[in-house]
Length: 187
Length: 105
Image (tube, chains in turn blue, yellow):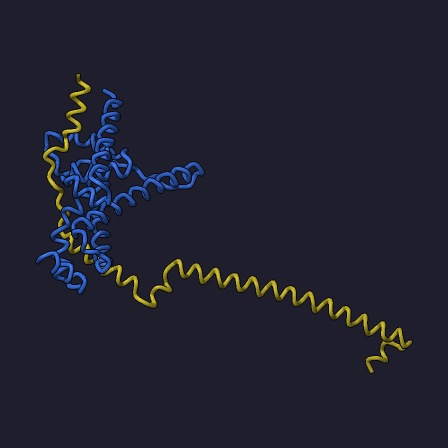
């Protein structure tokens, strides 16, 4: 099925087209979400939300951009929104806990092990993901899209609706931040 | 030197990373979620949503409070009017030097 046929099928709410869409993009969507959120259950929830959003909004898709660009954009936006919401709940839960209300804090898991990392690099990768967790949203997005999804600067610029120069700047800043945090690590 | 090595090791740790595949039965679970969403959005059932029920209860309470206040005010006005009416009858009787009982005959 070509992209045009796929879009036509989605707009006609054809099951076969939707299934094809999911088959084609589920790994990219899940992998991107997983890299950003660092939790398998949450990443799957977000991935599902992405496809539901695509299904609902396909009539608004302007075919000037590629379908993959649009889908990556939705995935990145939803993942970063999820992280912001999680941080807000954590802050609110902390305040409530000060007043003795029984609200469990949102606890970040200690180490995230991405299933696609080479065995001999798992420990270092887990440490790196902990540091990536501390990057600002846009740097984090650019870094994950480049290092985990292995997208080019051009593709990332289209997804983030910016220029290649900006993507380069984001990645440089992300790298500097990570270097700084690595230098501050004990041992 | 060691720090530099550590930095390099960490930054290179994602090299050669494989994409994590979507979980098994992802499509089936996605479809189930979509079906559940559609069922939740059925017309008529929206009234059972907590937000709507709470709003309805709020409106109901508000209407009751307003009615109660108006009733209280109305009772007070009636009491004052009655008092004034009685005074008017007595003053009328006094003005015409009538026995107040005669007024009621």
